[in-house]
Image (cartoon, rainbow, N blue to C red; front, top):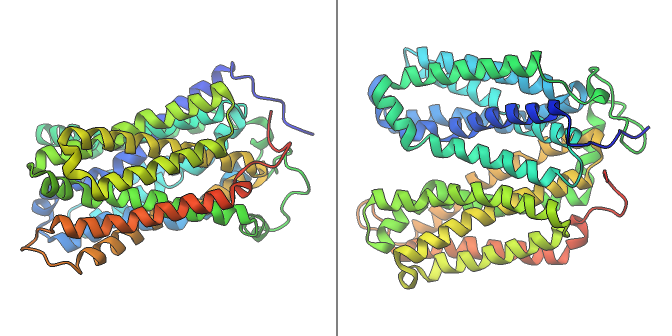
Length: 429
């Protein structure tokens, strides 16, 4: 028996959406918070950069490793339970981090935070697919992604101000209390779609029989060629852009434009600002006009190729103001293609294994970031440097790798466009 179509007027779904946005805000906040607090953490724990980096990385290891499990549980238990309980785990991690007497205890707190926030995005996508109609999903997904990037922005200059005023430990007590409250609201107030409210009940909107064993939904997802096409696109496109934003953009802009690091970091902040505009903007566009999302995705990858060409070869010609515009567009296009690609995943996946599929896909963007940071660093090390400063030529060679990889994605998407498009008649109307 098919699910009744979502009407988009039930206040419950909008309250649930707001709570999910607030929780997802904390996901991105935690992702980058330790970078701006690094000097204070080094002093507090009397440690070195290598140990601090290991402590901070615990977030990513736990986050990536648990994604398939989180997706499976979202399908079997319902997204509300997973988001609620995992948010409470993140709150516990915040408290442990705030109390940590040593860097080892801080690493344990950071690991709990990573594990907790790792149970948010995949169940959230499952919940949006239940609460909203197919046409509305791109818009609400874009708004969710925008809220996440707002968390990344708040975890920069505003967090530095809060830490200088109250101390970094107090900041994490505040974040932990907010996480605890949101977790309780999720568990006690929100409700899943009625077809997934009973634990273990398969989604009745799936064509065919429900999975008969824990392994079968994973095998069902992995044997679909579309899964691997999307995985490769996420790995390369997101990995190359986030490697640039998170590691090389600020020193590159300072060197290539001959500006100080403060201005370079402010230019780099335009990328998440653009993302916050592009993700919901693209979602609104797709929802409003009902355009073919595969065509939108191809157009965005083509624009990304041009942007990488500008970053690689045109910095001196563009200057500060030109690069500011380019970085803003880069963020907007990144938000747009993330929105469209996840919306295509939703539209092309049977509802009963949507959690498993997104859980298996979600590690690929993070793995792509790790791989491209190593790859671009290795390319740059082949060029001579002066002290700790890499030359513009070194950055150019590294970004040329990103340009070629993006061009490969464009060709792959053009050739396999049919693998990305929803099957005729599939999904909600």
